[in-house]
Amino acid sequence: MARHAYYLAWLALALHCLAVVGFGAGLEGYSHLRHAPALLGAGHDGHAWAFNLLGFVLPGLLLAAVMFQSRSGLDSTGWALRLGLALWLLSALAFAAQGILPLDPSSVSAAANGRHAAGWSLWWMAFVPGALLLAFGAGRTPALRGVRGPVALAALLVPVAALALPGQIPIGAAQRLAFVLWFACLAWTATVVARAPQP
Image (cartoon, rainbow, N blue to C red; front, side, top):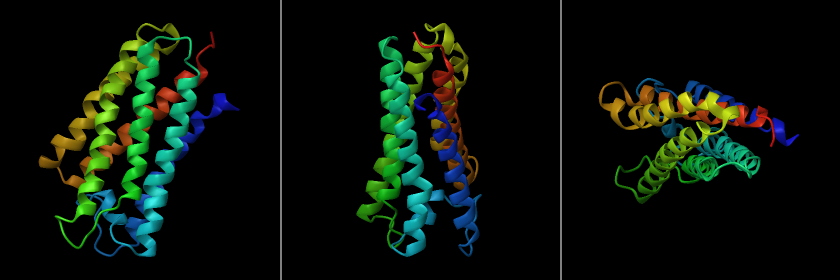
């Protein structure tokens, strides 16, 4: 059953996308192009709480469980792969933390917004070195070489989408691209790891 845990990673992606689309449709004036997904969880009403649970917390915890399971299946491989997946586990927990630490719409300088931003920063800052380590380690493991190119590309594209693109395209589109790339990269890697022959 553990070898099929990667299905949970794809479920996490689907759950996040459905939450963003569904709750976005129910919020008057909300634009998927212009507004960040986290705005759907801003505030303290029932809708915000539900979005944070379904859009951030559950997907993040599902991915953390998948990364933990994937790491445990690489005990006999090199340190780079195990450390890379450990950093991705941390990235997944930071993604979940964004739902536990929602934005406060009452003030841009509210302390809650700083805590949410810290979770967002840790999300991508843990992902990038983890991706580089995984790309390095996968190159030394024949069964995992199929993840090397996509992971190395994601290590570049996720921070570009999260940090650079908001100045070029609307922030809502940029953050959605960063999140989908991140989800897909983790899910694809977990799939390849699970299907690789066990030593």
